[in-house]
Image (cartoon, rainbow, N blue to C red):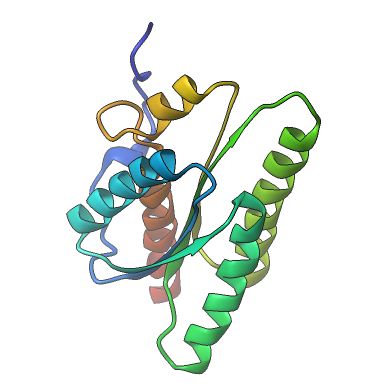
Length: 165
């Protein structure tokens, strides 16, 4: 089995978004996989020096709605989030439910990010098997939770740089 592919992308550089306030919304449908994704996300946030809150929801479809609700609540309290991260897992079954959940959760995150100009990292993994899910979720393997955080932080960096111009 091949290890994680080597990327030439810039997502491995340190974020300048230190002190950023990040919302993590995690789907707890698969508890152990959710724990692994969250561990990676927390590690990446600690490395970046970012603050974060965690909200749990039942499944991946609830992630975009929970982010929208929490973002609005934080705005009203004058404690806005700089970005958000959605974490979850969708494993293919015998029905088209996999396609619906994976497509709509990703679409919901993308629409929310674009409409609100909110940096969001998509850490909802979509896999064929539980073994694939663990390989993608574990910090020592593909660390998709950490990757979603680094994506959100990269967007926060871009937003901060462009707003200063």
